[in-house]
Length: 237
Image 1 (cartoon, rainbow, N blue to C red):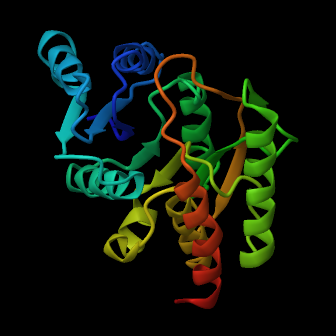
Image 2 (image 1 turned 60 degrees about the horizontal axis):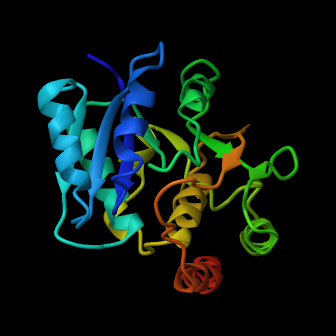
Image 3 (image 1 turned 30 degrees about the vertical axis):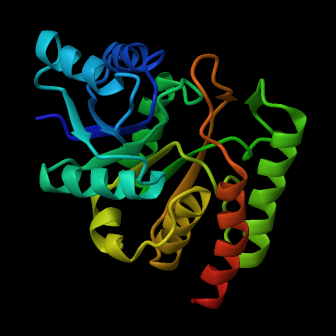
């Protein structure tokens, strides 16, 4: 049985979903894929189910949810499913090719071969490796990570990264039902919790490319949650 699986949350990703699934399955290394779809009205889930029936019945899986319930709850749902099904290495990745599937084996190697518990695909460990983002968004993201490092004392450069490999034991140890945040702050809270629990974390440099197709799910509310969420994490409230 394959020991690694990639969780990809989706909402209205019909332009990207088939291509990203094929890209993961085209890798030399074997990965399974779990799609968490939040009721996409554009038919994203139907595309996934067609691929499951026609090509990838034993490698591709989907959980359909009733509506937009938040990135954090999508990943928590996915984590629990993957733990129940025996996977040892569990990945987070976006559907829009902002994360390059060819970097998946590098994250896997950082955990499997190098003995780390958590590997982060980092945009900022070697400078600013972001392509096609407006400069305002680059600065906001970069300084948000600086802010998080300062407030929480984290030694992680890309605290909001959504391209991650977890060893099974990390997700088994974290009390997933007590993770509170849903947007960017979810990514921060997961890393901060793993750090506090003493897990070994490595940042792997990657190049982040802004989506070409589909619509960004970014909003001001997500950044607001991160801003105040970090203070709540620091105070333990």
